[in-house]
Length: 189
Image (cartoon, rainbow, N blue to C red):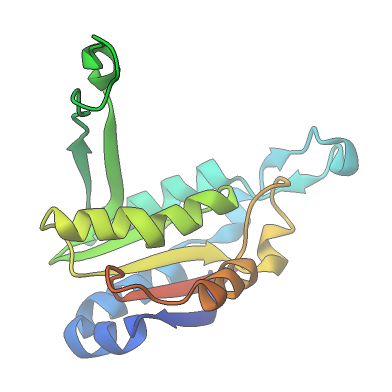
């Protein structure tokens, strides 16, 4: 695969180039090592693309996980413990806590990575909420979001979001004082 586009959110590119040059090189290596042609194996059942062979987001995610793991990147899971003092009645969220967690796809030396081939809301959540949460919990200082460009997303199931839409929204949202530096990488096959 290859990097087709980059977007520096809150000085993300500059921070990575200055503070994480070797990790940025590893990320670029991993992207180059993932052979997209091996992951075009999902036969569409969708009405508008019935029978068309598409890239499998599940398979692509597994390939990224394998390559990042080889380079020592690990996922980080944090258990969610919900508050009980916010309910109007005598209600216990204890059963809701069971198994609840948040997870960062890859983490190394205080840099977090999310690879997202899913719905649009997950891209926005990763950068606007999850990465800030993981920074507040003391795990990361900066992040990288790896997403498909539109051309690549068009060859996946409908509903997969893409780099161009994501950047448009981030540009219009602006930067908040709680946002961390994030480099958004748009990838293509």
